[in-house]
Length: 329
Ligand SMILES: [Zn+2]
Image (cartoon, rainbow, N blue to C red):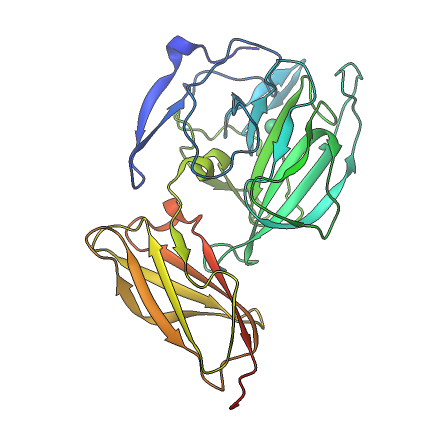
């Protein structure tokens, strides 16, 4: 087994919005499934979204593989993050976004000392559903997966806030050292751990997603930690009766670029709002919307997608607007 060494890391200018720098490792290198080493110290990015671990130390990249005995594991469908103290369970694990827990259970075998043989499964794992536009994720959600936990702190149905601790790092399931497997996929349950062939192009999060034979699409998690998050607010969780005006503003968009607004109605259907609006020279947007008596009552979600950057920045904030029955309706 071989690890990326510091001298083989390449710096990559990641041209997403603000031009953050991320690190990656050569495709020729094969990383171990997990971190039992203390040699790999990727330069940390400064996440703008909540990362799932405290030290954010990548130990197996998205698309990489490794060998264990005669078995080959190729095309890692997530990212592994090691413990602050290599090999020691107990680091807190955090939700990368707000959402609702869809899975929290023990799958397979394993223990916190990594000594059990014939290990399998995700071990103690948690999956959280995050609302997302259906035009980008067919089920209307992205699902974050947290595998190999020592213990879980949440239950199915729990509403989770961004950055909330959902468990602690461990070595349960198919793991040979303490680590977190972080996955991000557009279906629930979350599918595979390996695609069966390596697909990395040599830089971290390149490509940023891949699909398996079932049609599931897996995304590179740390892209979402590091990509600038488009911020929209003003209507966040606002509650108003029909006939009232909602004012929404946002920032972080391409200066003078156009944005698409997508509305998810209370019945789950989604429609693009027209006309498109344009960001100002600073990348800010703003608009108002006056509901009518025919506006559906319930919780509406609104996303804004930067047309220039598209999917690369699609971890956009959404706005919740709760429309109640107006007095005049
Ligand atoms: Zn993994």
